[in-house]
Length: 339
Image 1 (tube, one colour):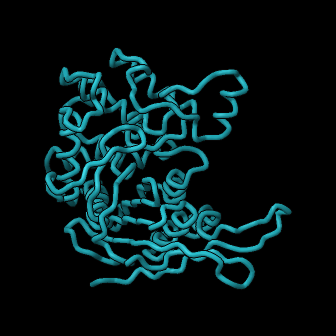
Image 2: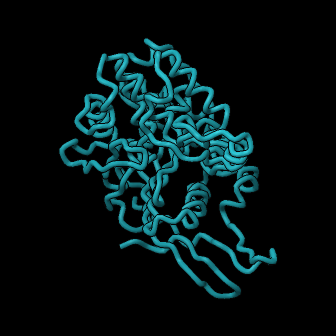
Image 3: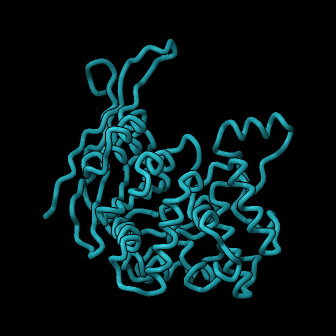
């Protein structure tokens, strides 16, 4: 059963609560700490992105098209649709000989409100370049061009690019591909259900790859490259005003943070060699942000500067329409060590 993660107060009493699960795992698949059920099955959603980009490296496509560190980070991110992100996607597409119409991720307004407002003010419409999954889709298109695979149906679950990604996710999570439940993400791409602890394992491997603590091989090298790219370019993992970017900037070089959707979140703790995976059962971001930041605090991946920079996520205040503080969102869990 899910356990209490976050309380929402109004006045002196708790008005609402968010429940869920947390798993902390090392690269040897040992459960280090947990809340709730670490074996609950969770849809990776955008937590899968750093692994969906790995075939770009393991197949040689990244080298063939001269992907740089910025571009690898962007393809691993859930993007704000800010201008600097859009420009990088466009330059990759130009190099591939493609255009934005090849992106089948759909169109929505930029997640970054000032960018969305500027587009509207200029009388311009959003394009697929502004989709928060545009980077991931660009990587999929690069794989197709590199291998000569068809572009028109690159999102089909049985397409070679999606089968390659499924096999990669199976490798990093150590869940056999036949046991992974495949669903369709908000951007139309296949996405995967695995146990929460196996998501944490995959992120622990990212941390261990950076530290040189995994057996050498193409997949390990790819994980290290992707993780280092993300750590070097936190604004390309999410964008301004987003928790992932703010965590990675506040704890520079120490944490790779990646949101999912519906209350999913993952962290690679680089120095500790641990992976953390979170699922808020009701899928609400209000319960997610304090849980992610409190997990860092309880695992002692923390500095006074980071505490100050992340305070608004850690203990958000609730204000009424008169701007009076009437309550607070506060973490209410303890990560119980399992060993």
